[in-house]
Length: 545
Image 1 (cartoon, rainbow, N blue to C red):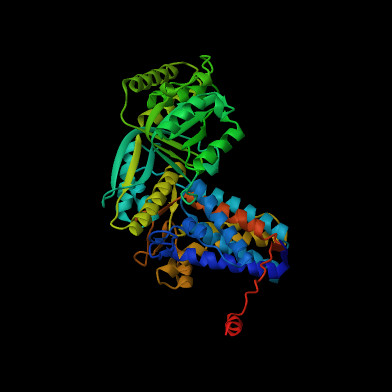
Image 2: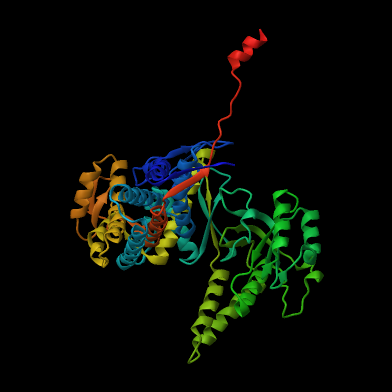
């Protein structure tokens, strides 16, 4: 198909139009007084939500240049969501500001794109470092509840997320599910999670959710590489003939075999999903044995000279539910078995023995401690209830965001919220730049100036004069800042208005990463849209008369 090309300022203006259309839709959701966005669905009720990444994925434009700009913003939100699971609206807002200011520097200031990029990336690194320096750890249940409440905008959500974390521990696993009743309840079940996901994204049927769920599934666990479907033909036949979903965990898989499994799943013929085993070496084998005991499977081990061709359904384990995401797999089972209790006691004994050694291996101790946590922590499941489908979808997204924000806060700590931490860094970070080059300095200042945008947008969404609120925010000291809920300047830490450090860092880093690439744009190439010449209906009617 023919291509259409535009250059320089014209290209950037067309791209910026798409960026603004998308970002302006997303940023009205920011803060406690932010509004929701209604998203039409092809089937069923519309989504009425305030989740930044979901909104960006739903919007596209007929104009290819506008769409290219929108895709850049969507990439910022997606990257932020993949790493931290929250903060996508802030990331979109920062990205829009950085790109807009970068394009202005190119088109009216005569600055050099490559050097602007250098300054933008340098500034983002400084901001990320200063956020870590300002971070404080989450120590109390109240702080966990506050983080979840601020993220979701709901005290009810904050309480149930905090309760879930308390039940399973700070390193435990919590998943969100849809309830069959009107109430939202917390349940804790046996199971474990490991840090490996599906080997191919094409296993995912619903790309919006980016996850796979298998109910009442069989599970094959092996440290073999599976090179062909014929090696596990008996297992696949069992799954097919009994209509039992199948999870296959192996050291690795042949690409052609994965393609065959994907094709069968897409065609609703065979519901089997492949996941690579976590870790490597002896630790991998121990983890796989843990999984086998948990699910009452037989670990098909190379060390025991067990062959895949000899494996049948008697080797399979059973799980009530499997949740497979891009980078993790969660196994939910019924109850602890005596074999699992014995396994837990063995690991506890090994930990005790290592600690009693004069010169113990810290790496081995960490591995054992992590394995014990996986087997004893349990899985928290928040069953989300609502009176309508629309309310259910919105509520579930809010709880997922709150859960992700809470995990991020536990991992890297918290900073004062409401844009306060970024405003404080704006006031101090300019002294960190050493370059004398004007374009580099301009790129650096673009990032720092963009740090003020969250405070301004939160104020705007709450119905206040953004410039006035920002000026007052700049004058505040210590932890004092703007509470958009009450319209007062308060001690943000004391009032529980905190943001997870990891979420804020990712928002800045991802916005700067995409902005630094966009400012090097000198041309845009898209497919040319050819107008179709349809016959004139009036003339056709005249011919028929």
